[in-house]
Image 1 (cartoon, one colour):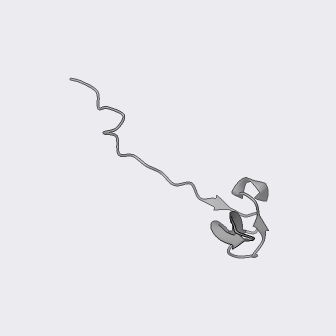
Image 2 (cartoon, rainbow, N blue to C red):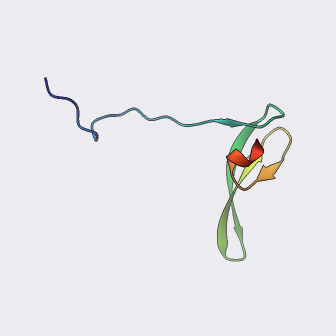
Length: 56
């Protein structure tokens, strides 16, 4: 039997990030000075960083 092609595979996953305080990190998009800027913000402690991996 033939294997399924890479386009036929439907598994997808999303990664959740958590702050050291225990809150979930959400990505937010800001529009400043004519530029789109994305930041990661903790829902619990409202700490914001440039990307989710900076919370470690």
